[in-house]
Amino acid sequence: MNLIKSTLVAVLCGSFTMVNAQGTEKVTADVKESTQVQVMGTEAQSTPSIVGVAASNEAFATLVAAVKAADLVGTLESAGPFTVFAPTNDAFAKLPDGTVESLLKPENKKALAGILTYHVVAGKFMAADVVKAIQDNNNAFVVKTVNGQSLTLSVKDGSVMVTDANGNAAKVTATDVKASNGVIHVIDSVVLPK
Image (cartoon, rainbow, N blue to C red; front, side, top):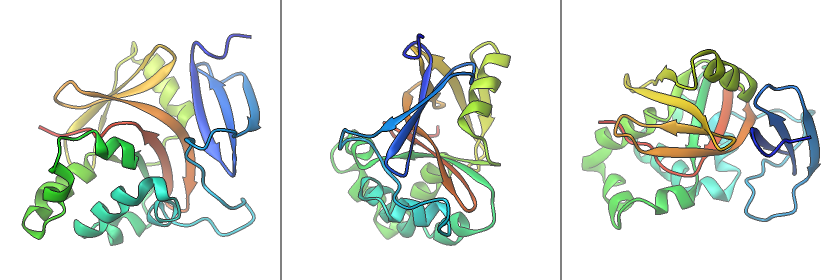
């Protein structure tokens, strides 16, 4: 069983699920590494909105601060549904020194909102749907973001990649984090519009 070649990882409730690119083989195991992003809770509990899910996980503290500074909380708590490619704190830390601090200033609210909405796609697209769309489009599925610009999704070395308009790519590190108004896929870099 070769799950490594084309694997997506979904981290939910302290476990992860590996799904091959064809979506046919699944293996579930307990998460043992503290670097994994986890969403606490169970399906029986009320599922929070995208903002609620992000706010409940320290790995998204920078993203939550940015969403608040850009006045996007109301939008991302609305009915949606949305698919969010959510950068972690480590992803934001990869930006040049001072970038995040500058973007969080009130005078840069419009630019910050443009960057954040570039990470959001209207509709709920689970990992299996994304992988199928990539396969059906010769490994280059283009999606329009809420920002109005496009991202290109592809598979490289068994991982889903999100490539921005500048040619920079982020790797999807966790998928199918469910929210009441959509789904979150975790990425390891911030993607930037032109």
